Image 1 (cartoon, helix red, strand yellow):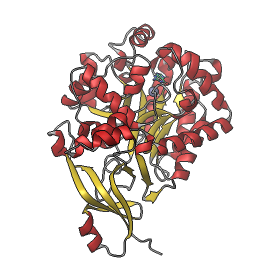
Image 2 (image 1 turned 180 degrees about the vertical axis):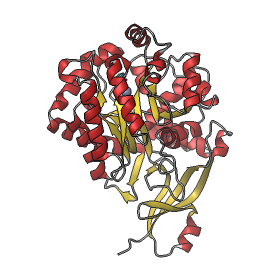
Image 3 (image 1 turned 135 degrees about the vertical axis):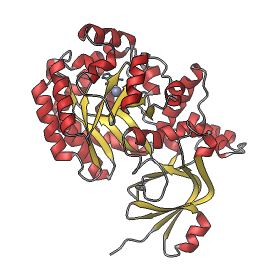
Image 4 (image 1 turned 30 degrees about the vertical axis):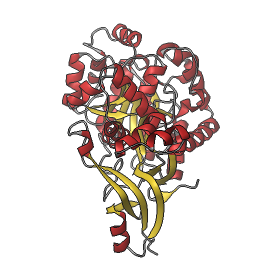
Length: 432
Ligand code: GUN
Ligand code: ZN
């Protein structure tokens, strides 16, 4: 039995271009009384609501009133196992990892912990309007199984990978070059390309992977080039100094990854705050993506990412929470932090740029911009309806707005999960 079409009615925001490359307001299309027609999990038409209604009289109507229908948020770098330690006080990166992160990730030796945390994480992500993400798991293969099983049950398009570490990690949280290769390979066979699931080969970062492990993972990526690769790069200055000690013969931090084939299109480097000129040039040349994690960068005290400089050079950049290093599950809070970091560097990012980063930009970084991250015919129907007056403080500011951007910006700066009025994953509306 064919399912009936669904027609969502409301304001609609879609992007036709990258707002860092064309004047921001010209990169977006805004329908004040728009419609999005959904069939079998896909967006089939976007346009004027009344016109679509007339053309599809049998479609089931879902009227979102004055809410803004957009693509669901895409969190391009998150650690689902760190859900329970979000907002842990007082440490910078290396101490934070040793004090909070590693003990928590150790608990994932128990598959029941992984299953329960994955469920809690997806509940939170979806409540915040995040319909896709790229997540680190722990070194335990069962943590990857739990993540993918939960994503599959929810119908989400996600990327995940076993986090590999064979040195400078506690014994209970270490693998080897061989077991990292074998386990990752088996997980690729089990999950990669199953429905909406994709695998990312995941060395945690240079300090916790020895040369042999990095080489093994580089070889694995060469064998599976359609997988993504995710890791961390140049987040804090003491970390960079440590990498220089551990790999004294490399030119810079990126060179460690480069030397083992861990660079190129499909590579996603989290943070990338303190980059040298050579690193920026190589990242650009090879088509690798950088993932900006602004709430994490302020929370852990890492530094100020150069969004304006990198984007104007043509660098691919996605946006992410990096929870639990990040201090919020909300991509709205994340956009607000990106705005504030931009201001501290002297550039006020336009609301169109912020929203693009949280949707189409992250999709591009994950090599999925032909499927998710925008409201366009032929895309998968992962959508949210955003309430632009979700709190009294936001409502009183938005009520004075004369343009969409003025109406949206208070929600970007002050909004959270209360602004998410409805969410659709693969065309299915989630229960409230
Ligand atoms: N660098 C290596 N591991 C991590 C992590 O879990 N979080 C953050 N923010 N940085 C890292
Ligand atoms: Zn991270």
